[in-house]
Amino acid sequence: MTDFSFQFTVDADLDNRVMYAKIFGVWRVDTAQSYHEAFKEEAQEMIGQEWGKLVDLSNWRMGTPEVIDKIGEHMKWCMENKMVCQVYVITDPVRYNQLQKMFEKGKAKAKSATFRTRSEAERFLVKQGFKIR
Image (cartoon, rainbow, N blue to C red; front, top):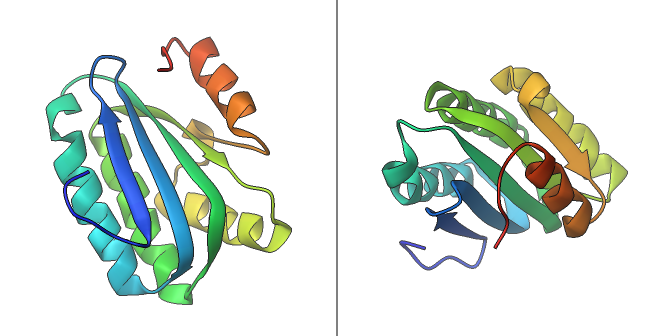
């Protein structure tokens, strides 16, 4: 990860072309922007080849309404830069609804999947042709 944050971690597995993120707490738009910038920096070496993304939302509490638009933009950026699938670990129905709005804003629904556990999310990525560390 490039910068230290209490609200997210971002890690690139360059060998297997998978971006990993963990999200924590309540997000405001400035947090979403910081996440997007850190994500872009970490993903830089994968740009130009197909890659996947696994995001753990187990410890995410919610985002302000503006976060929906900002993460929607992030998802668009990911797809424009050859992300072929993104999987999310999420268990809370309220946060799930907010995530669905982000998929809609980012026009990312077709490349997105949600799971209740990390192991389910990892199995899905493996079925998509990715290796998991």
